[in-house]
Image 1 (cartoon, helix red, strand yellow):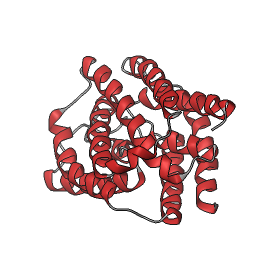
Image 2 (cartoon, rainbow, N blue to C red; image 1 turned 135 degrees about the horizontal axis):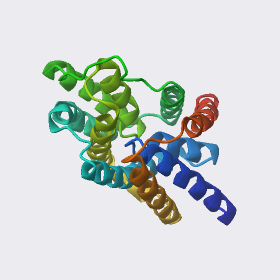
Image 3 (cartoon, rainbow, N blue to C red; image 1 turned 90 degrees about the vertical axis):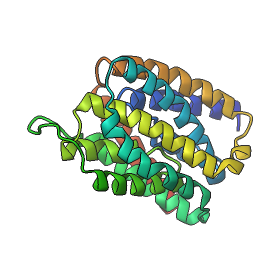
Image 4 (cartoon, rainbow, N blue to C red; image 1 turned 180 degrees about the horizontal axis):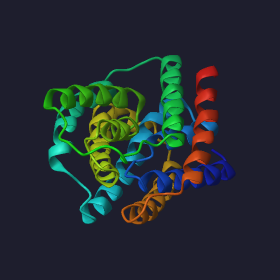
Length: 245
């Protein structure tokens, strides 16, 4: 990549990491969108997104954990179902065309979630049914491993809509869920890490800086709605580009 391209991509990665980590997410859909817009090869996108996701989710998990925004009883059934399936999804290879369509659909869904955040205003928190949590975690984990995301964009709305966690606990649970999912998916597709170019170090630094900033602010207060919707527009453009490419 040219120097200007690396600078632009690093800036986009920083912004995505800061915004996503503020709500406990690793930002993989944002990284995929940024790389898609910059024309990064699909073979590079998945492992790069997972590595960045792993870093930012670690920072978010740390900050939300310090803020006591985490529930082990809510987390473990979803994680137990997702971890082996994320590994399987990462291990299974899909064609470039299929991967691009899957990524495009995930980005469009992520954009929808950014524009329409669920609310807990009228729901009392209750414990998720064990079997349902295991099955949901398995489905989220498999899709996450195939595409190269941590699954937070699927888990967060589920927890909130079902009334299984309040918004801040949802952020904390999602951060740790994304962390273990990203690690499992990356292990399943470990050979692809060699596809990350040397320039990827700049992206790691950008994601780390953005994740540190966003998670610190987000563990105390959530991000601005206008910023989420602006990112939603970017995801729509990137998702459409991936599908029609």
